[in-house]
Image (cartoon, rainbow, N blue to C red; front, side, top):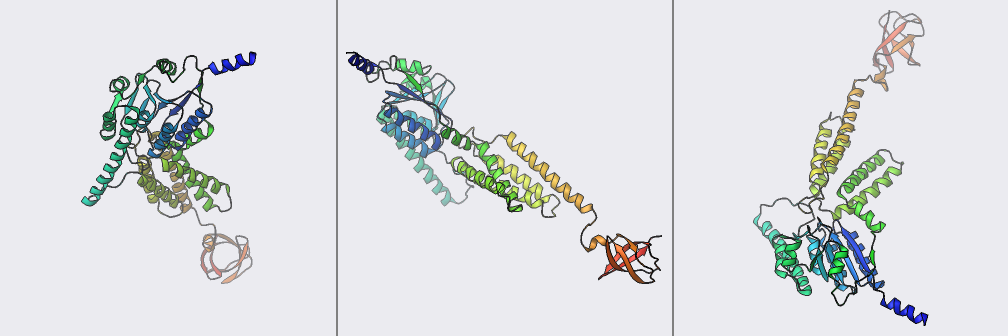
Length: 420
């Protein structure tokens, strides 16, 4: 009897609701994290997944992978743009349209879903044929995005016409306006308020349902850090400088290992970020010029040119128009540039100082050196110069122990002058 009552109680207990955070740019890491959370919800027999979203959008392929997981989910997915001040821009709008339930908090917005290129800024083309090809490609991408969002809107019964405007005209809506235009289903203050508004849904039993917050795992956090533009920028600088140091000092191993790892991680991040490859080329060229300054007698011309190229490349490295808010901070660029300039000044100063110093090695170092006569002689004899015995020639008579000074070198004979 007790077993039957326990079983009945367990069956009556409402199934959990999973709340999954989706914050920041949508990339492979975040899409994989949310997709795994949706699969976990099905495995744990959750009755609802709430994606709490705040995103500027980002990569199309990652967005589509996440939408496939939402469409294939046996568990209803509610995408909730929250808290207040959040947004569902670009790819976020598509995810909102694809969800079973769409909701927003007051003070949030969605839209601006026009497709953008993340392959870097292309040089301007004057040829009419090239412009026509570029316009054709833009139309193809835009029409594909329009068809995609209209298909999602028709599947979920949402405003397809406004979705098309969000793609073609990059328009945006506030939460209340989106509700009026039937772009979303609910406006709620927070997750508990959203669950209250969904309580009337006959397919859900949300009263007293346990709410489980899904924590972002370590893998997602690491990948999110790596795709931070500032981190990627520092990694490529560390990688390049470490490899240069390894090539200058073969056999140290550690700089080469660190440099290779940093360079590969930076290239992975740049593959995902809206990188201007002309800026990346300028950075590498600037570093090459500054390193060459240490080996070539350019007296600052290579170093200064390299520093200018480095700063310009750093400023234009990330295409801000493709993803606003993901540019490299100017303070970081200024700090790295100042450090590079300080190193450059140190190298130039050392070069100038070394040029003024007397030669201390080779045959030329003997000119002006002090010598001591080892015997008496009239024209030629022997003298000690820098601890070595040399054959010397003098125009004046020399006595043993006289102080001499080297004036010239003729083969293996030094011309000296007696110091009186």
